[in-house]
Image 1 (cartoon, one colour):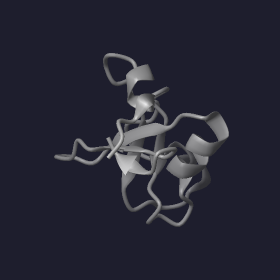
Image 2 (cartoon, helix red, strand yellow):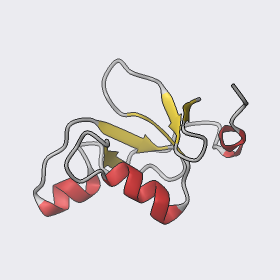
Image 3 (cartoon, helix red, strand yellow):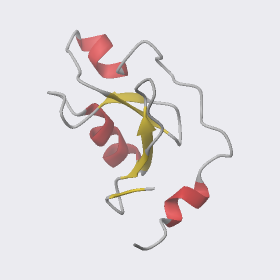
Image 4 (tube, helix red, strand yellow):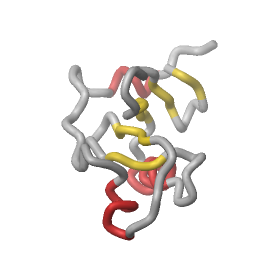
Length: 87
C-alpha cells in the first residue's frame, strides 16, 4: 500500500468540530444520518456514505478536503477519499 501524501498536509491536531452534535447539513435540513465523519482540514461534520444524504463525501468533493476521521465514539480511523484507503 502506498503512503497517502494527503495525510502529510493535515494540521498537527484535529480541528474542532463545527457541529459536534451531528451532521451539519442534516441538522439544518432535518434529515437523518447513520454515522458521522470529521473533516480533518476544516472540522466539518458530515454523515457517512451509509446515510441517505452522504454529506461527508459531498463536502470532500466540493471543498477538496481529502481526509476524514470517524466521528463515532471509540473509533479513531481515518479515510482518504482521493486515495480510497484507510490512512
